[in-house]
Image (cartoon, rainbow, N blue to C red; front, side, top):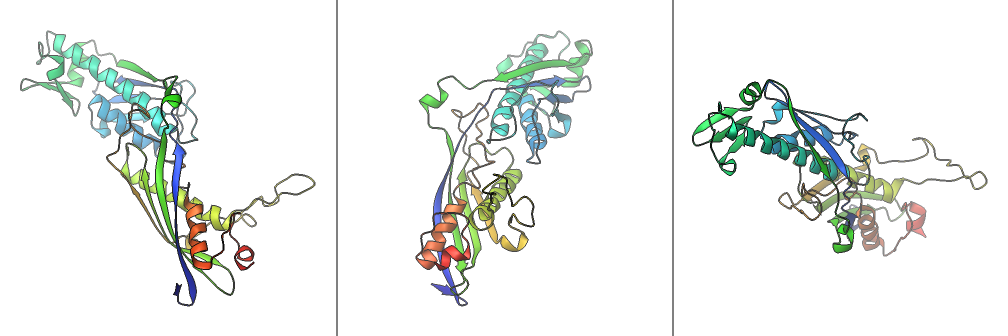
Length: 317
């Protein structure tokens, strides 16, 4: 197939990346004004940890996100894993969920047993918690009022999660996906240009759709770089990397990135992976992209290229 004098090719590849889960801890503290402070010694590299953990904590405690402050990045905070290997959201969200749920349970128990509470005597399972209020039998008790009656001091709970020892022996736990690529290859120069990328992913519970889409898209752009641009060249005598800066080590720029469309299953939750039901998405976006592009080049040219990056000399050989 051709388009405007260029060879047109389409290809696909599967994606898979281990759904890692590391031990993590978190602390949830209800303040006297009815807001919450949640702490975990995690890291935010710009992937949205602050935002996502605020949402998870708000849901677990029963507050609006505007009533929750999540803080991280201090070794004095409860221990959390590094940011890498697609473990942050899965592990830290599970710890935050545990801490937030424990705090909500404690607040419900205090309220139904407090003589001054409007919902005293209600069954804990009948209490609905939302927006910083405990609601039962048509009556409401606010978090702020509950703390005030309890002496005005912050109320806190801690959460800790660990993967079961037989977790990886019992299950094959991965994020999955499929990548589809369309390329145009210049038949005279051998240059390859990606014109479309579509990826579909199953990555467990999506904690924030906008941030997830951005991260999937970023991984797919990395895949373009892996397939066509990035190449570390070593000095054969010294073993040092020669391509040490962006003048020599090429990465995709805006003109290299076509229409990139990530799709994902928003309703998937996998409680075998983690208590939060989430899987990591940091790496799954890149996995399979380069293979899909290589398959598309094969479809366009008939040349099966197995060494990256796919440069014109390999296409023209």
